[in-house]
Image 1 (spheres, rainbow, N blue to C red):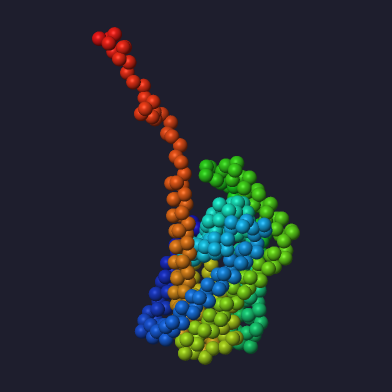
Image 2 (image 1 turned 30 degrees about the vertical axis):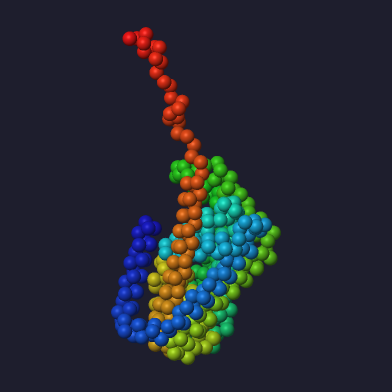
Length: 355
């Protein structure tokens, strides 16, 4: 049922995307994109800073981090997980497992899963903090959105509810319950004693972290606030590249409301509705041409796809190295096969006697 619902969301998102491009006209969209030129490279670099801040937020959540777990490995795992989340309707679950698996050789899988979940919660809290601050700073423009008052409130409720739900689940030993569910479903790869112990350890790490590492949690949240705060800067620059008059308030409000739309449509992968359509709606209400809003969203999509490519490349390199390491391991002899030199030779004497 869930898979069919996700497929329906994807189809509706693609239909909306095609209708929007057709209504605006390809020529106008192309003309807007042509104005940006090299400015797209600026947004790609700016995104690199945001992802570095995200990786630092994850690193802060790792207590007693092994020396072998370098920032480069964390960064590669982070962008790989984000690529999985972007391309699949996994609600960030698939990406979290990818991140933990990519560092499991230097960070035990229990610790990896626990810290990834903690970092996800810190990211959600950081997003809420940024949205709240952005809406307050852009309060002068709030009167333009009287017709969207309840949708905005609804987006805030969803955003806060998702964060609160994530925290509540973490306090109820989620990994152990997942292991029990795997045992009931008779999944041999997961329903093992070793996985059961790892799930209990991960749950213990979650509870211990929230009880004794509140400073680390706060620092992690601040790292994600910094990452989210780079979004308005990107919108400000893109509007300038497109020849439009921009202000800090417009950039803050556009990014904050855009994030609320993304949260409300989080089940749709690749932001098929929220990216171009959301920016066109918000900037249109603020008095900008609809084509400008669509161009801003489309340029951000190009930037995101570039980083998705980087993430998938990091995942591919990791899997290639895993395959090479497995191939380099000595293979045990297969039972029942006898070495040629140890094979039993027929007795000449016995043959002669039979003759």
